[in-house]
Image 1 (cartoon, one colour):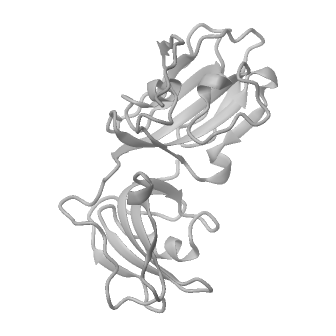
Image 2 (cartoon, helix red, strand yellow):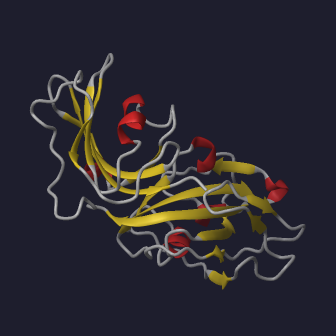
Length: 267
């Protein structure tokens, strides 16, 4: 069933904030957890979108998978609710016309990568895909700050290349292998990396996970505990445009073939 959102979205664009005293103030650099100051005023009932800063990357378009960090807090008491900055795992927003609210579409689509956007809205219209109103009333006002990492086609892949296939001679005991050497920006430790991947179990070689099947590219932070242990060493030092086979031994051996589509270095 398609959902329609009747509320009118008010869009304000500024280098900082519109109407001093009635809007939250957002400070901090893109890519870092924002500092949000909420005024001692009533928030209103109409969703409002403010462009805090404009990036210089490719604009997101309808049909993209949008990758973004998001910090969500309650207007009342400026209480944190959820933040992808804490878990170092950006959210993946698939605009397939079924799950994403109109407020998120207005906030994220048509924005250049590198932009920071704020959404102030009642919770019933502000929650993203697969986010529940746990502990919230639909009427509670939320403040969401998005850092838009980029938009990518759901079937994004290395230019001119076929879908990844696990090499026949690869086993979990084999060292990581560069199948295609890219020539783009270098991936550094602690950076965010945008990838498509296929994962097979061993020894069956059956596909058990695939970003292509789940809706498109994902972003991960190359830090211990944030990605499979074998990924960090295998992807660090690679370049955008590379395809890397990464065996992962252990109790449940896996083999990954990873296409590196983009990287966002830590600010």
